[in-house]
Image (cartoon, rainbow, N blue to C red; front, side):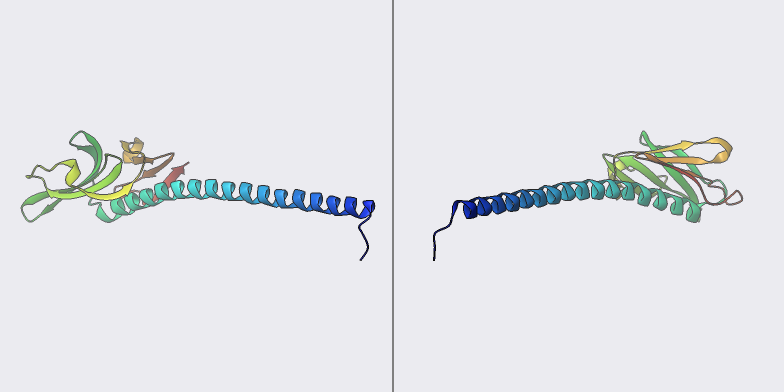
Amino acid sequence: MGKATGGQKVDTIFVLIIFSVFAMSVLLVLTLGASMYKNMTETSRDGQAERTLLSFIWTKIKNSDEGGLVYVGEFHGQNALCFDEIIGDEEYQTVVYYYDGWVYELFYDKSIELLPSEGERVMEIENLLFEEAEYGLIKVSAGDKSLLISPRTHAHSGQLTIDS
């Protein structure tokens, strides 16, 4: 075969340069796409945890409300959602509270003193706050989401507002 001429060398180099630019562009697009996907997944997961927790609390209130026995209170200095009930002659309480980076739930006989760490861990989350709002509503805030709930069985039942 004959030797490559100067024009063929330039053509070969030009094709290699174009291929290299194309390969670098593909790598850049893949890297940016993977980074964006990771950020979107983390954002979605964070929001999902908050929505799941708010749904858990909403369901807990709706399934446990006995005409005013659900209220915002404290459990060992922790802001808590309290559910009182009487079984037989004994007074019991279920509390949902935020402690040490976790949401806890604890059902106990009110005559026994228990520590916050003795509750059952429900979910790890950044923060949780219960507040009494107007008209007997309870405002539950988790992260950047909040929920207004009517705890009274005779009042409007349902999820009123979710702010994000």
